[in-house]
View 1 (cartoon, rainbow, N blue to C red):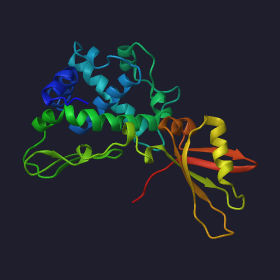
View 2 (spheres, rainbow, N blue to C red; view 1 turned 60 degrees about the vertical axis):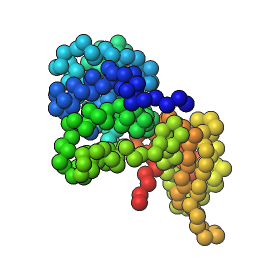
View 3 (cartoon, one colour; view 1 turned 180 degrees about the horizontal axis):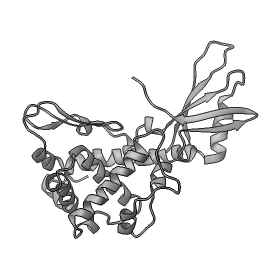
View 4 (tube, rainbow, N blue to C red; view 1 turned 120 degrees about the horizontal axis):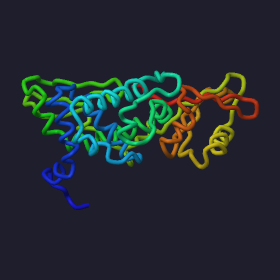
Amino acid sequence: MMMISTEELHRYHKIDRDIFSRLVIKFKRDPAESLLVMAVWLWLEDKGYPNIVVKMVGLSDAIVGALANEAVLCFKSCLESNAPRVAAGGGGIPLTSVLMERDISLQMFSQNRFTAISGIKSFLNNVCCHVFSDILQRVLDPGASQANLNHPLFGAMITTNSSGFLTGGIWDWQPADHGVSEDDRTMFLTFSRGFPVLEEEVKGVFTELYGDCVESFQMETVPSGEQPLYARMVLRCVTIVDRILNGKRISKFRVNGKHIWARKYERRE
């Protein structure tokens, strides 16, 4: 691909930069939170809600701030928690719905939680850290050595060194193919003791329901004669994770009278 200069990149993302500047310079909002707000909006645009940011250009500061608050609500209530807090009826983000001229709710984020997380990570890593770095340099305290802006889901997003230059966090992330890591696409499966399940049975359940969705499968390694009680299953795309869980933390499946419990895999160091 032809190399794009920083000036060309900034010019292409001028409107995104203008809105981000309003958030962190004019409104003095938290920089890490504002990065996530922009990533949420960019992800929504990528998912078919066009021109979200462009439509904000002529809006008042009060409305732009309220729209940012709704974006914060999306990732605080639906993405950060393993038990998303969504009100009965789906929860509302009315200003965002009006802006996009389409119905959208917190329930949509909850039901597509892991798709949203991986997409937002991708925009943070591939767009935001390149497009907004100079603006962040202006708002971060250059005298704050090793100042971290942390997020419970995305980790250390921004780190400044003693010279005030951005380093670490999303600036050091290495995205996988299409920005979705293998861990993002992995399910952790557990089985009932005394009811041994074969690998072919497990894979068959998910293949029947979701098509050719299993990329790899690893059953617990146990001594001969013992029953594996868990397995890890890597899926071909992260959207299948959300389809399996359907907004829940754990989903239950049944094969030949035996139960399978599925939840999102979380790597523990």
